[in-house]
Image 1 (tube, rainbow, N blue to C red):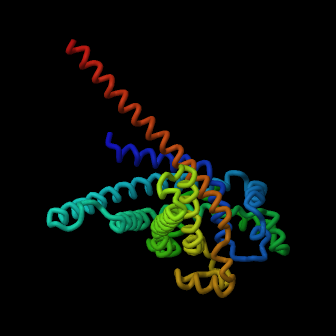
Image 2: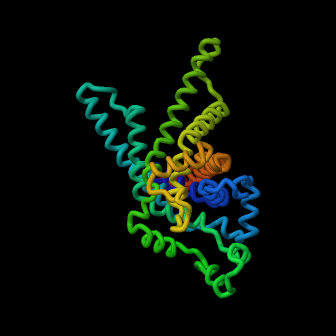
Image 3: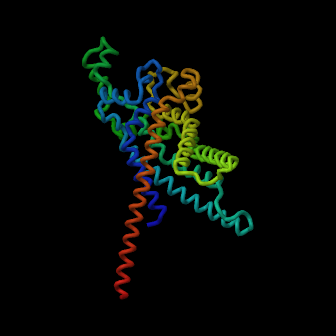
Length: 344
């Protein structure tokens, strides 16, 4: 088993476990991003309170709405990304080697080429897996209609009409969402929000740029203090990475909100201020009716979820890699021992 395959499978396993543990936070975060009415009490509630309200009013299973397609999307995204990353990386290495033969460069792939490879892999991943995440967003933001809520909203309506209003889908399944999306906008409906998602591919690049900038400044400061530029501790590297990730999240989070707004279901009877024709229309309407704060709704929840998910992912991934390598090494040792005994 190749090292790339081991890391790819371990990454997928770590991603799935991180999804399972942090999915309720993702559901609440998506609802926060798509809440367009600042007068709603949920817009002012904290993350824990919102989770409690969802469980109380809709049942605990709503916190895991869309979990199945989300797990499929996580596994597919990991597989697609790592596959195309390796394809593009191999081509970049071949091109670098060819240039080295001609006396250009040192034969290695530079930082810029590495960023391009990562960006291209991310773009292919987005284009191929976006339909899955549109379905997930719809299922996360779907809310069960309560009979009491309908009665309060429509006091003069008969019981039969109220029952008809309540019956949406007994369980809002993936097949219902797929049919709903196709009825709304045809095949294009599955690629809603793809533009801001493609732009968000820049998140790792921004993170890497911030990390390198901070690292360089720390090295310069240490050199000026005559403490040496090297010898960073694991904690220092961790903190630099965390700060860089936070900076990249602050810069790209508005795009995540816009993407969620475009992917969520929009009723024909909704206020025109809440109906978006595209990315630019969503951005202009959000600025006009919600202000800049609208682009950062639910960001605190996202930061907590992202940090926790990343910690779980890296921890599980490393343990799976160790376990896989141990199994492979153990098999090799058994074979070597068998061969040694046969020779003796």
